[in-house]
Image 1 (cartoon, rainbow, N blue to C red):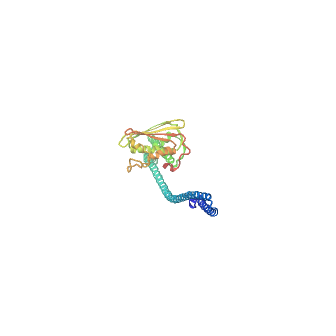
Image 2: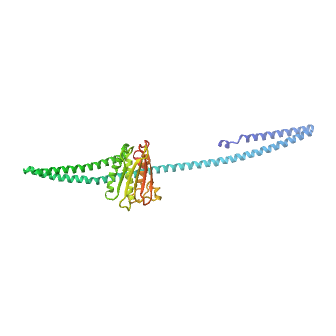
Image 3: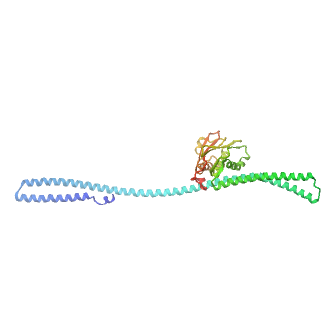
Length: 380
């Protein structure tokens, strides 16, 4: 379009040429008529020439009007072209500014995602740290008992050795008492050592699962027992209790770490929010096959419940009613993302104020191969 506007249209040039040609024709005819009149005074020819001249002049006026119209159109097109060029330049500048703004927003989003990932990682490590503290506290009892029994047994052995070294006569009853003490001590040490080993084994399994995000086949009840044994210290000095209604034999090919993280976060949420002002709360976990390829997992408590106005926001990041009081606002956000993005399931919240909270999860027996894995999954 720009090229067409920059040079005069061809029809304008042809109009000008036609006007010039007609003027020459008219002038030639007039000259010829004048010569004929001077030679023969032919009035008819003169009239014909005058009529032709009038027609030519009329045609010339039409052509001149068309020429002026074309020139006007050319000027309008030129102004339109200039206006269009200005608008194009303005749009280019606006587009460049928009691209700069989009790049700035992308940088900001990346920074926010990094901050979110760090916060979620901190939350996960804090949860694991809480488990460590709980396990350490629980280990004090069996290890302390073992140490006490070992010290007592050591004294009995020292006394028995002293009697042997001094040559005192050992009565049958004394020997039997010593053997009984040894047998009882060995039983106590074995019992407490087994308890400590179970705690350490469960913690090791939970810690490995939660930190490595490894996929494996596992029994759902066994995985729940392992993580709940790690959470017992949180309930030890309260009247709250856990009820598990999950049959053994429900095997999943999935990620036990995220599942354990989900249970940990839900229990923590109940203790921190649900049981506020309640002395004896109940947490109940149920699971049953929903179909050949899915299981229904339900977590419920009889706490204060969640108001309807807040229920729509509980899965949002950084939403908490305990900001500054122990709540990070990431617990249920992590739960939602682990259920949907990692385990490939769904989760729904139900309940009402004063009636507790209920989380219904529908999980596939075989987690999707395309599920998000790795550390970033906690911030998906």
